[in-house]
Length: 369
Ligand SMILES: *[C@@H]1O[C@H](CO)[C@@H](O)[C@H](O)[C@H]1NC(C)=O
Ligand SMILES: *[C@@H]1O[C@H](CO)[C@@H](O)[C@H](O)[C@H]1NC(C)=O
Image 1 (cartoon, rainbow, N blue to C red):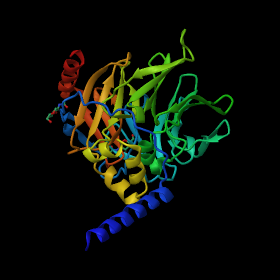
Image 2 (image 1 turned 30 degrees about the vertical axis):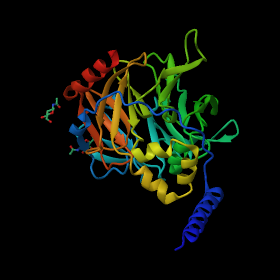
Image 3 (image 1 turned 135 degrees about the vertical axis):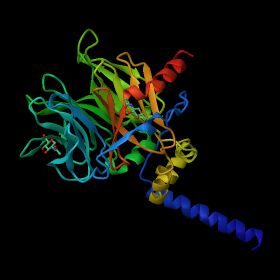
Image 4 (image 1 turned 60 degrees about the vertical axis):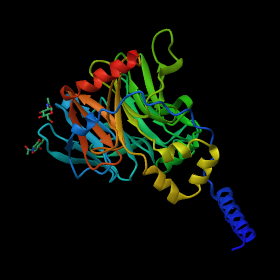
């Protein structure tokens, strides 16, 4: 081909791609916050975990252990079941809710289970029925119910990750980076839901402090967790609980000593870092679903951190290349063991804390530098 023809052909390709993006781009991106530095050397301690329930658990996103029931473990899977593992190790399909969007689960004092259904809203699951507690809040739809926790007085705090995209398009929400997430409150006395915090950068895990003086909500897209004070002189005020996390925080759970465990996504790869660098690359990728899938698949690895009651990172565990587990979405401590949920496994992970003191030491060393 003559140079002129090549130039014309190249121009035609660029113009048609540009037209495709203009017509099909589903996102209106804003710049991403600076990506976190990686201050923790990989320790791969998560590679020592034991696999529970394999292969019967399809993407068990959240995990909860009921101490009152002697350590019965609960999880919600993509086939619409709440499943549990008895202390003797046997699994049971416990309650059927249906759908593919069961995410956060939390025990309720009355023996029922509070469940976030990403497609339907906040649910209460009892032995013989499922009730939608909240599907709208102050007139707006709860688009992406994600995680919940019940306070001693029965109030439920829960998150609506994003008001622009649902669970099935969470990756678009992530690369768009518009902070539209919310921390919501459900009052069982009135049956009303209210907005406690908004403009959150993908509102994810929710946990109460041991004394219920504050509630923490993780902001996956901001690499931080925010805190809303419920008691004391700062009641009603919000501030940052922990920032500059080494990835995107997902679920958060209170530990027995008052600290918290947080699952951290490693939404990183050379390609993904390039995509989130400019708004035009975000637009381009979002316009081609096949590219979105390919690029999501480049992010490998898993990490969890333990954070003190004051928001200091005290423990880091990872599987840096995802050899044993990827995409841990929740971590919960019970009786000296950690249990892990994930959106990319068919099992729940278990690891004895006694075997991972190394992660603690390394994190301390890095902290004081
Ligand atoms: C394990 O415990 C559950 C609940 O108590 C019981 O239903 C089940 O039969 C037990 N399984 C075995 C193998 O002991
Ligand atoms: C620690 O790991 C070793 C080797 O994987 C295992 O044999 C041992 O039982 C573990 N200890 C605890 C307390 O889980």
